[in-house]
Length: 405
Image (tube, rainbow, N blue to C red; front, side, top):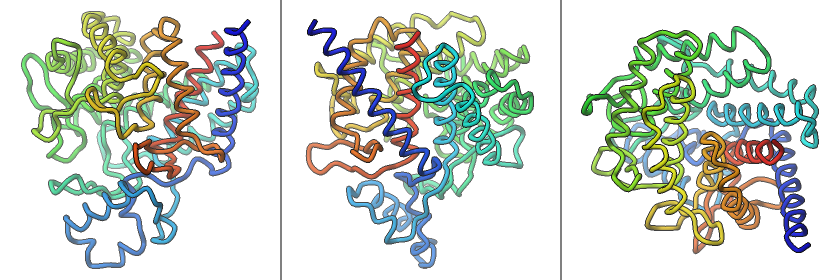
C-alpha cells in the first residue's frame, strides 16, 4: 500500500510540475533570456566597450554568473533561441505520441498537432541562409574566451543537430516534405562548411564555421548524428562514411572506464554529466539510423560510467564526475532523454524518478519555470528559456511518454 501511495504521490507531483512548466512556457510564447545573452543588452551595445574582447567576455560572464538578473535593467530582450525552439518541438512531438496512445492530459492530438506546426514554422524561419545546407545559430553574440567572437546567428553544429532531430520528428507527424528536405540538407552544411581535424582512423568535426574550437567531442558526434539522419533517408554512402569516421574518433577518445573529457584543448579536460549524455545519445542515434552496431561496447561502457558517477544516492545530479556543484539543470534533464534513446528507461526507472523528484523539489519555481543552477550558496533562479525550461520540457515529455508506453 505504501509503495502504491508513493507512486501515486510522485505521479501527481509530476503532472502538476509539468503542467505548470508547460503553462509558463506557452504564456511566454517560448521566448526568454539565456545565460549567454548579455551582449544583447542595448546599454552595452551603446558603449565603446563593445569593441574590446576582454570587456565582452567580462560582460557575458557577469550576466552568466550573477544570481541576480540584471537583464530588464540593462535592456536585454526576451527572444526565441533556435536550440530552445527545437527542444520544445521535440517535447511536443513526444506529447503527440502519448496523445495518439490515448494519454491526453497535456493536450489532444489535434491541439498538439497545432502546436507542432506552429513551432516547426518558428524553427524554419530561424534558419541561417548562405551555407551549403540548412543550419542554425544562436540569437546573441558570444565571446568564446579571448579566442574569437561568435556573431549572432553564426551557425554551429550543436544548434543545427537539435534542429535537425526536431524537424525530422515533426515530419514523422506532419508528413510535410519541405520540413524533411530542409532537415536533410543540413548534411551538406556538416560536410562543406565545417572543418575536420584528423584523429587516428577518424576525424573530429568543428563546433562551428569558425576556427578555434575544432576538437569538442560532443559537437563532432552531433555532426555524425546529422549525417546519420541524412543517410537513413537518402542512403548516400558519403554520409555514412563521414559519420562513421567521427564516431570512430570519439570512441577512440573514450577512456578505459567509459568516460570522456569535453575536448582536446588544454582548457577542455573536464568530464561532465550532460555532455556525456550527448555523446551516448549521438552514437546510439548513429547506430539506429545506419544499422551499424559496431560501437555498442562503447555505449554500454559509457552508460555504465554515466549512471555510476553523475548521480548521488538521493537522485541529486552531479555536474562533474568528481564534483557536485554547481548543479546545472541540463544534468537531470539530459539523463532522461539519453535513457529513452538508449532504451534504458525501464531498467533505470528508480534512478530517473529519484532524480526528477529531487529536481522538481529543489529547482522549480512556484511560477512553473526551472532554475538554471543549484549551488551550495546562492543559487541562480533566473528563468532561462533555452537552457533551463526547454531542456526540462523535452525531458519531462520523454518521461511522460516512457511512463505511458
